[in-house]
Length: 427
Image 1: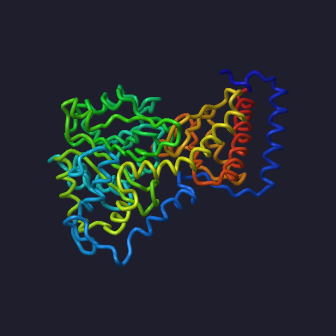
Image 2: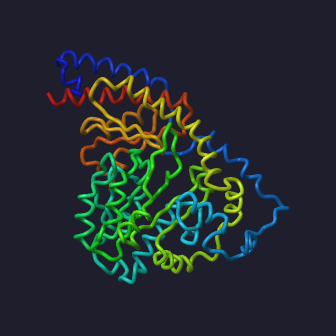
Image 3: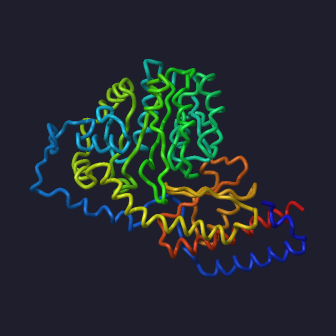
């Protein structure tokens, strides 16, 4: 679609800019204070899990099979919690550890393990010179922050409509022994909302890394987080590994952070038998036990995969209208102008927006000036460096529908003004 602003005469463009600047002045006068910065569940969503607080009482027997809940032990997690996590990920419970409330903490700990202890019998990474991690971009800023914080070189790779550009990934992984990992959000990716195709998953499973201590950090954060009429299907990476005759390649993570309570959910990890044995040995130093009361309550509340799906269907009734509002506001305000594009996810927590080249920082800055906080421009790229300065992450779940609608109205005006100014400056 042609850029409508390019078809305007200079006089028409100047008139449009004057109108849009007047509109921003009117918005500024309202003194708005709106926040779309992070992908958080709304208060209505967290309220869905309040009945879980009644799952345990002083009369509840504190045993789960052979596990004692009110004392030390069971560092891998309660059997009921491991069974629940295994159903969510479709893996063997014997290969699951449930520990902590944050899967990001587990990822951080395994990066530290690679740095300080080494993986698969190899030297610790800190003794191997420069270490690199691949970062499909746009991607999750907190992933990139972990590796950057340890001086690991983050290398961006293109994220396409069906997953990372696997030609680029394979070239780097299979020819550079300094590449030790890749960050992945394979289902409803943050921020684009895309799900990796079967072909992409199979190509991941067939990788032949130059480094024996290379691992795929498979963050399946949105495994059960559909809100559309259909749920994207993600091929099971471990089944794909088996078909490819490969092993010891993937760490898969997930949590119930956006199923029950953020910061008070369950975090879990699965990998091959050999990798899990190594992970247990690493974790044994710092994990004597696990948060058993939380795990027991979760297992009683969610029960099984069907129970999780029932819970997520309730979430979907709250999340879907927000994403529908984003789609409607952007389509009505920008759809015919050819100055922007955005993703149309079936699940997850974000919409990825692409404006004209050189626009993202200006959009986010002007939004803040007008009282609407968004994720920082560039955050979806390693080191905050979006090479074309085009990507803006929209996080619609936390605000009320009324506040979200108001924020999106401001966003449309700001995008139009920034695009018009960029076009004017190019003449």
